[in-house]
Image (cartoon, rainbow, N blue to C red):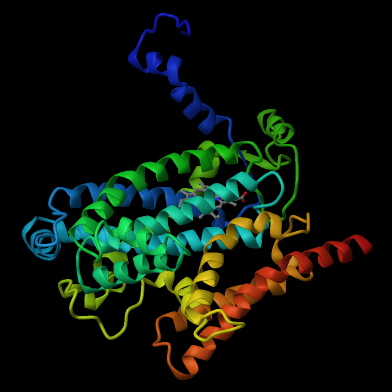
Amino acid sequence: MAEFKKADSMLEWFDQRLGVVNFAKVMMTEYWIPKNINFLWAMGVLLTVLFTFLLVSGIFLLMYYKPDVNLAFDSVNYTIMQEVSYGWLFRHIHAVGASVVFLIIYIHMFTGIYYGSYKKGREMIWVSGMLLFVLFSAEGFSGYMLPWGQMSYWAAYVITEIFGGIPFIGDELVVWIRGNFYVSDSTLTRFFMLHVLLIPLVIIGTIVFHFYALRFPHVNNEAGEFFDFEEEAEKYLAGNKKESKVVPFWPVFLSKDFLVLGFFMVFFFYLVFFHYGFAMDAINFDKADGLKTPAHIYPEWYFLWSYEVLRGFFFEIAGISGKDLGLIAFGIANVIFFLMPWLDRSPMVKPANQRPYFKYWFWFMMVDLIVLTVYGKLPPTGANAWVGFASSLTFLTLFATLPFITKAEAKKVKEK
Ligand code: HEM
């Protein structure tokens, strides 16, 4: 066993064993941030704050929520919304927070892609970030089921059904996930456990890892410039603040983050008080009914693009059914962003507008994702189905060609 000195305080006792105080001190005082970064670099801090809001409002909701198919709907729509003082406020903060967190995650993710912040040396930051995206998706999906409204029930039905497409084990897997042959009380209680315990715990661990992974390669900057942080920090400490390319995280950089956070809070609470409806589906104010399928089932806005990829393939190609093709495409869409550091073959770390080919690829992908999102909400009939097919195919083609495009770009830049 390790030997420890006698501790003068409880904090010291913990610090000797876990190093938490020292870790926090190092994070705050010895953490250097490049000067030339814009408001997009504040998204990580916004995400941390939003996650805290979700955690705190979730704890309040947990005091009155009842995970039982006979009680869940009323415990949310009647007890929390009408009986408990300020219950509505915590529900709105939680629902709006769950939607807005995805908006900020997407901005954070596409900022990373635009500035090439996933490249050599930063792979672990990227992979842990993508893990957070998947975990937040699972958290959002399991939470959406809890009010036990019509869309909660049918979204859970459709999404769990997807696992049935996996060869050999699919049918058994669906029953295992649901805990029954259909979406039922056992499905609700296990999703409740996942939503309030297991997934949040894993998210907290992954956020700590994400922050830790950032320490060594440091954050990227607007120009993608590489410099020695130690040297720049020494210049700053020697009083040469103007010449140094870095500023300390605490208090200099964090003050800039707080400014962005201030604007964001105004926007967030404006939504919470005046536009909370956008985060809730009207159909979900009807209690779940396993015998009444809604005319049109669709997920929350942040899943629409991948849902459209799932529906995009609706006819047989080369002997493979449309349903299977959709499933394969959906599987690819959900993991492909993990591979960005390896699919992008150009070592150049520059913002997309300074990369001759990648800039077209980036904006093409953004437009395609918007088209997929818009059509994901429309019924997949007539021309809509063909737009869905074309945009899903474009999505897959974009990623299949990325290694060739970026390799050609690297060659072109080298020749110059
Ligand atoms: C949802 C929870 C997340 C939290 C709390 C979080 C937090 C942070 C923070 C505080 C930073 C440093 C400052 C900044 O650049 O914003 C950061 C950087 C970064 N994050 Fe995240 N992040 C999350 C999700 C993600 C996701 C989904 C991705 C995408 C895969 C991602 C990829 C990155 C990358 C590449 C960087 C480095 C940026 C650079 O070097 O300029 N993060 N994150």
